[in-house]
Length: 343
Image (cartoon, rainbow, N blue to C red; front, side, top):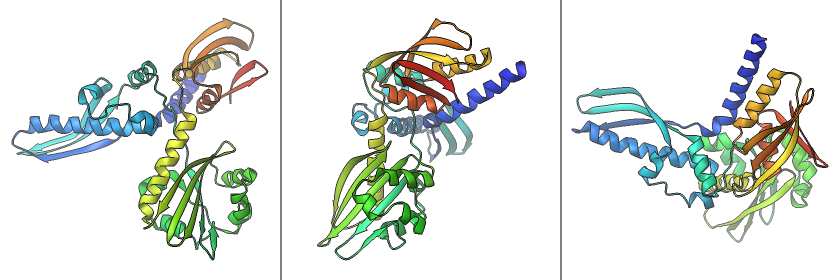
C-alpha cells in the first residue's frame, strides 16, 4: 500500500510541476563595478525584482488588466516576494558578480487579483500553428515555400518565435488539408484537420494583401472550433520581426481574453467523484484543492466508489474544465449531472 501511495504522490508532484511552469521565474545575471558594492547591489536587485515581476504578470494578465498594476513600485512588488536567491556570488576588488532568482508568493498575487476583481489565466497555451495567406494582384501563396513570411520564419533564430509558433511543413499534404477556399470560407473542419496533423489546439491565421504598395494584414485566432478576429495592421514598410512580434503579442492577448478567470463570478456545482480506492480519492482531492479556480470543496455524501462534493469555483465551467484537464481530471456536466474522473 505504501508503494502505491508513493506512486500517486509522484504523479501528483509531476503534474503539479507541469501546470506550474507558468509560475517559474528566470534567473538573472548581476554584474557591476563599484566602490560601494552593497549600495549598488541593493539597487540592482530591486531592478531585477521589478523586471521579474513584470515578466511574470505579463504571462497571466491581459494588456488591459496589466495597465491596472503599478509595475514600477518596488514597495508594492515586495509584498508579493516569497524570497530571492543569490547564486555564484563573487566579489573581486570592486568587481561584483552573481545570479539572482526571484520567487513570488503566488497565493498572495492571486488573492490580490480576487480582492480587486481582476481577471487572470492559470495556464499557458501550447504552440500556435501559423497559417499565412500572402496575396497580391497576381498571385496567392498559402502554405507554400514561396511565401515570403514563411521564408523569414524558417530562417529566423528568434527564440520567442520558436517557442510559440509551429511552422507547417509547407508540403503537398498541408495544401491538401487546408487550401485558399478553406481559408476564405471558414471550413473549420479543415482547420481542425491540419491542427491535428501538428498536434496543437491553437492556430493563428494571417492574411497579407498587397495593393498599391500597401500591405494590409488581417490576423485571426482559431480556437475551440471558432475563428476570432484579432486586428488589422496596415504596413507601408514591412519589418518582419516587428510584424511577428505584434502578431504573437496580440494573439496571446486574445487567447488570454478567452481563457481568463472571472474573479467577480463565483459558481457552485455538485459533482460526483468516481473513485476506485482511498488513495485515488486522496490524490483527486489534492488536485482539486490545489486548483486556483476552486474556492471551496465540501463533502456532501459518501457512496461506494462515488462521493458527492459541492464545489465553489471562480469563472465559468468551461474554464474550470480546461484547468482540470491539465491535471488529468475530466469534468463532465450533462443535464445537471456532474462527474469528475481521473483519466
